Image (cartoon, rainbow, N blue to C red; front, side, top):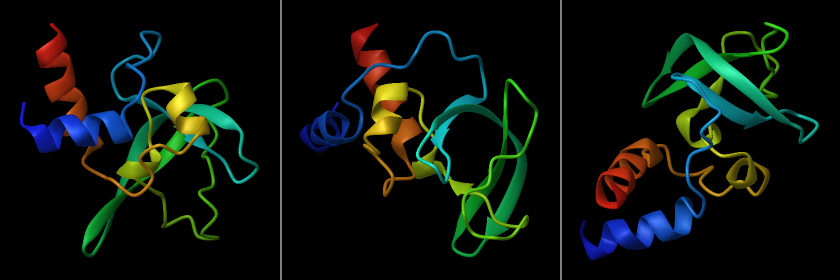
Amino acid sequence: MTDRQRQLIKGYLPHHRDPELEWDQYYVLDTADRVRKVEIREILPHDPYIEYGVYEVSTGRRVDPGWGSEWRGFRMGHLYDNKEDCRHREHDMYDDWEHLRKIQEEENG
């Protein structure tokens, strides 16, 4: 792990992954700032990035990201693998956080 990666992990991933999440499940903040457990069901390409249509695990309903369009979704930076990080919006502006999480988990065993 490089010093830069260590700094990014410290800044963007202060807590470890929640063990209760299954593969392809995340947390998002809805438009009322409630944390929702979701799964990705749609990939919505928007140049130069990708957005994801997510659905709440407990109800199966699509979670509105607040764009007012069903063709818009959440960027990866708005998807979290930890409730506490989600509440505090730790990496909203950093879409490549999953790569950092992988490095962090490889380092920690």
